Length: 423
Ligand SMILES: Cc1ncc(COP(=O)(O)O)c(C=O)c1O
Image (cartoon, protein in one colour):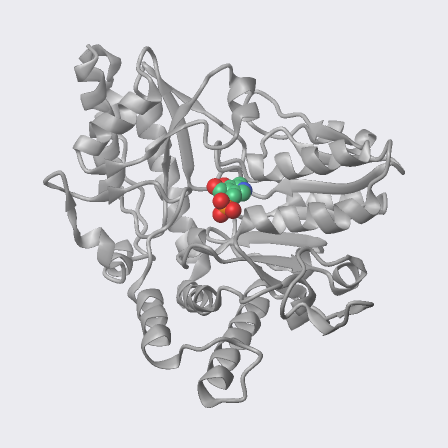
């Protein structure tokens, strides 16, 4: 099996990323200091979820120790404090995305809930028989199934922008798909399965020329690149807190104010109303109309701490470091004859998916785990992507700014051990 390795594997130059000190960043993440199975933990499962810096852990801990209460309904000190912190978190998120208004920031559970919210409100009110929603061939299930559900209910059709063999969308096919029947385009910014960075600005501009609004699934983009929703001019943008160093159970739906105002509520209950009687209920203003019940207060405050922490870094330098990691990993992995990289798009971010001939991705993941290396194996909730490439699953390493070139070396040596086991 060692013949599957060639010279290049061992001689690939490590690119210099002197401008960014990943070792200093690592010190902010307590979980990374541990050993796993007797080896230092090498965490390369960041597309599934990122680890949490001390700044986030401490903020959540302080909130529960010193500041906790329910929000919006109390006149007492702690309730006002918690309300201020929660609404501050909204302002921080607004500024992070450069949205125009605080009311355009709706706290939800994550990207999945954000997309379901739009499908069940905007989709439910706008779609009728014969109408169409456009997604792409590289979507996560979270940006397929909610649209399938509402399209089926309304007699509408889900249309799919195709991709080529590299995992790039075939944009020439997109514009002819738009018509007066198209009610929404919903597109992933960065693919979790392939790492493809979609030209979302171009897609938005084309859709807008046809008067069609666009939702961007930003679950895999905000942690790797600056995102400005006004500059993009997207109509909706969804993100998950846990993928950008924040807590689980919190995410954001950004929506243009006029669109959100026009949409019916998602869930009914407390906080989303101004008045209720058995005869008539008056819904609350934005964004509370979409935040029924006690929200994830600690989650929102923790998310704001994560966004502030993330923003305290030089994002251009961080992105350059992650891109150097990806390039180095790609060069080293693709020099292994038995290895096939799945997803070779023109522009990629932080994800390298691969298969090894005759070794199931789950076996790759299990053997790497014995080396303390955490990757993900499976279909990555993107089964149509797997079908496109004619495979059931891939092994996926995904990088964060706290990963180092040494992590990549360990991954490559781990893959070598996998090949030795199956030799
Ligand atoms: C591209 C993409 N969209 C949507 C989601 C769903 O995110 P969540 O599970 O946080 O709701 C994910 C999660 O991996 C994702 O990668």
